[in-house]
Length: 220
Image 1 (tube, one colour):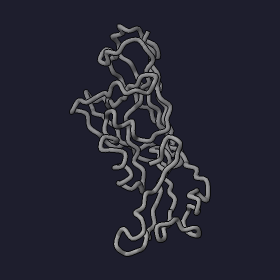
Image 2 (cartoon, one colour):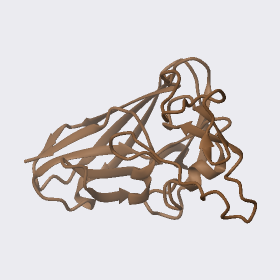
Image 3 (cartoon, one colour):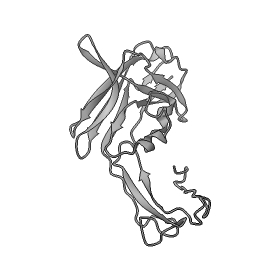
Image 4 (cartoon, helix red, strand yellow):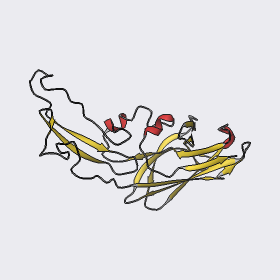
């Protein structure tokens, strides 16, 4: 994984450590992953413990031969209504999540259930304005993680909940919808590297790389 500056390193065993007198000879792949962008990768060829200068996508200085551009596959915008509420607000808050595939249909997973013949949704992460995790909603066991197709036509989810259940003071809050993008050819080891909680509704979900517009709510 890269650090906050986008730098990374490969730590290879020194020559002779495996009793052969030679360094590592193997191909590695660097994957560029953001959940709602198409996965891309670079090949790194290691010969005798060194980066091969004439093979793969990384040169002898450890730099990419070409700049990588990831293409967005899913647009996600989140709007909260009302956007401002008093601290003692007892009425429902509606979170409108708009989804649209950019090039071809895809699948996402979200928490939902049918109640009184009406499809209801849940799954929200509440952060403070400094991106500190505060709440995950909802852990009700009756909700089920289910797959849904998203096309090039905008799909709108309305997630409704009582703000009083959050019991948070005055301040500015960010609201993030919980959903998982089903993208092809993502190595399972890549998702595992994000941690065992990255695909669950909770603080670990914040480790999932995502690019989206977050909703905002002000409590006054």
